[in-house]
Length: 451
Ligand SMILES: *Cc1c(COP(=O)(O)O)cnc(C)c1O
Image (cartoon, rainbow, N blue to C red):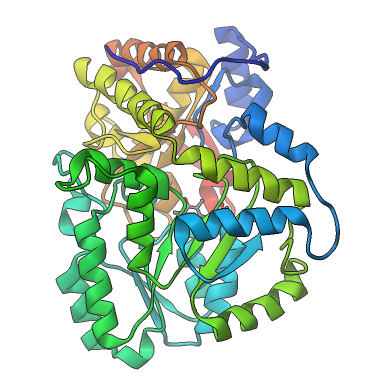
């Protein structure tokens, strides 16, 4: 199987600990069969999330030493503002310490009870911030997003007809903003096409509704456009990003994804009045508008990370590594959502473990077994995460790949672990909950194997 050669060499290493099966059996039992409760030091390969787990470059670490910690008007703010303007093109740039703060600022300013915010599929924090401000978070993804076995180049697309129906049904006055998540994280890290962005933009501008991107994985999305959409093969990823953002009116961003840093975020808008209202609120909860809850050095690392993330050697490696893992699973008959996403492979636990019913958490059973067999940590996205309110359609286990952190040998190791599990998958058992908190139960629930 093919893994792209890493376009970097390694200057600093961090030891990761191998454990014995006996140790892992004990740790997972102590953790109540919940991988969130295992200390990270006892994990060999941690694929829980790609958020904030990136390795920074020598250039970014050097930037950390150039941090200007002045309270107001530090030089790193102006550098980051220049880089953000170059890529995103929006007039106003507001730093925050995470993406969800940008969402909170935007929705608490624009929403009031009864307002509606459509998206292709809302990410958890986006949905929660819309709801916390009395809004209705509406998903309008194309139907293909919900077909795990269907290969489609742009499974993250918005269903434009459904969106127009929603606008007519709820009324223009009740929709202060429409979001478009690139790539669509909750739908499997799937990209949105430029054509779809253009259509969504044209529709919204016909009704005078602003379009905001949830831009966390914009570079991966633009790389897919270059690979898959006619007419973009000869454009650079930077040019593609510039065109894409030109169809919108602003964005929210978690720098913990495609800005290649461990903490940070921002909000952009072309609306001066909105920017002013948000900055006033920012001072209350995050800090002065030239640092927004971050240190000057963090702003510098984000600026340098954004310049590095549009490098096409990096993106070919990044997306290629995820695809390499998916190809390896495909060759061994291990089911996952097709095609592989930009940042993760989503295992289809319902198909892999048909003998475990949803009420016994097949995804959790697979996540537990990944740790038992190889010290690999992954995240269940199925009945344990969502089933408290209603049974979800899919039982998934997400293998999210941190950026620039693991080598292809590590990916091969993960694939081998899954192949060993596949050989004896009938022996995997379901789980039952012995204790759960009232909300977001998957983080803290305690489980036990079903006899
Ligand atoms: C991570 C993420 C967010 C929230 O960002 P944080 O920095 O974790 O607060 C919002 N939207 C999407 C699509 C994300 O992946």
